[in-house]
Image 1 (cartoon, helix red, strand yellow):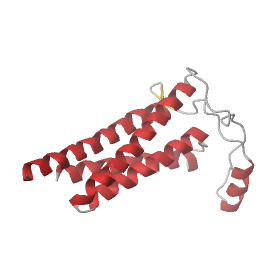
Image 2 (image 1 turned 180 degrees about the vertical axis):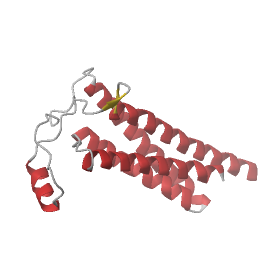
Image 3 (image 1 turned 60 degrees about the vertical axis):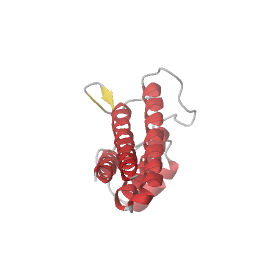
Image 4 (image 1 turned 45 degrees about the horizontal axis):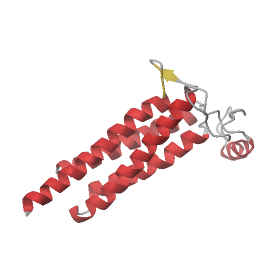
Length: 165
């Protein structure tokens, strides 16, 4: 049961993190940069793997748990890289130049047109912080925690399998 709960908690924390990112984007008006988008893809893989590991029969828990760990570790790596780019510790991708403007009202068609014409947000700027930490910094901690939960889930699954022998 610990295995399933660990994966479920990782999936729920990941989903809440993803929802928060979308809220910052669509309610708060903070357009994501290219690194933010990459982190979202990795987070999505981690969430999907963790959710599936939580609901599938136990024999399938390890493969989906490994997918979850890989997704969250990829997000962790991207978040560390993004944090360094924001703090100007190293260069970011050339595609993260920044610029453009945000739509002022919710019109789906206008948003799609505007997004296709807008330059991506700058990866080396911190548009929001809390206690001196940016969203990428918080993603480092969240991704590490979610990966750790999934590793615990895999260890609990392995310990249960060993005791059954």
